Length: 530
Image 1 (spheres, rainbow, N blue to C red):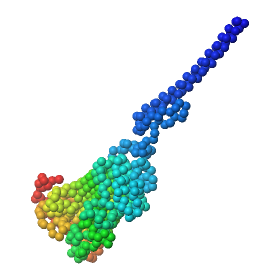
Image 2: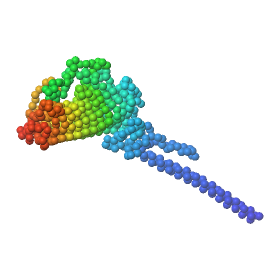
Image 3: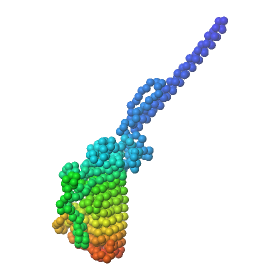
Image 4: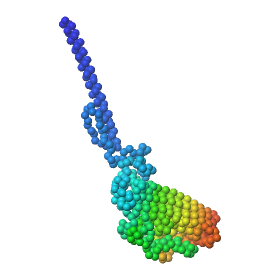
């Protein structure tokens, strides 16, 4: 019995030990699994701390379903960026903007980067002043890189003079214009007069795009044009034939809506001091004065752009460039009351092509040198252009008394349809009643005309250069210009102090061009050089 009891006790002890060992293993296994979960969570925590978004740790009870270690990003941080290479905090350095967002939804732009003017109080009823709402939407968009300010379709926004300004705005902002913006027509909104209506200033990578319209409602300004407002001086070349002159009313008419408007007329859309500027898709119509202007800008691109104003609207240039370089203007339709494209002093590396121009005064370089100023223009190409019923075709105009130079100009493949003066150089330009004769002049050299064809109504070629600074290296190739009616008397080509080469026979013959160079041409003083 004693032996049996001892063996029984020993067996029971062994069984108890095995049961106890098994429970220890189970606890250790559970503890090991829990430890591994914590280790993975810690690793994930470290990974996320190295990542883009940061959050706070959350401790939770054992056995409950773990909560996410990090909360969702704050509203100001873009979520779900496009999958193709775009990183919201580090967009490509050269001019990235969200490309071609759809007209509804703008899915290609992170939702937290979209600022719709309607969400900032804009009514869009065409009557309520929405200027403050536009200012507020811009202030919000300005803070985020690659943001988009939306002016939605199917609304008409009444907006007074406004500046969307930097230089402290983030880069690559898109102004998505799909609705219509209209200007006020009451005189009190403009005070004594302003130089611009909608202005973008000191920005980097600014894009204005969309299918919308900017309507200056300029007729109330045009009819108030002072009697002595400047007129295009090339009218002097036309008057002797048709005996007519576009004159202003002897007594200014007042707007029935507002009383007399200020004498200073604004540009509809102006960009100043900006880099990498793009304008595409939009229409500007009935501007008070110039439609689209670039001052002191570098890297300008304009395409699929429309200007629409009557041919008799005074001084309503389509696109005006001044002190700007590296500009591309293409694939656009411009109808206005002055130059379709005006290239002024300080412009270099400008390329204009595939433009339909008319009505208007053609594509012009200048006027330059007004008030005895220095003007510098170089490397200008204008090609593949159609002119329809314009006053001028391709033109260079300078004032007497100026200094500086225009050089490296190439006009190519220009189709003229019923253009009054297809090819013009006028170094005696004057848009006032009387201008004093002066000997100093802006020097012109390296002016090339190639493939200028079509019909004219007054004079095919007018090249009037300075006596003291004759035009040099003017070349004409494949010029084919016919009068609109063969039996009508037209002026013959005219040249004065113009030196260069005829590389092919021309129609009509341009016998007045002096072949070669002016040997006695004075060399500009150092202060005249550009």
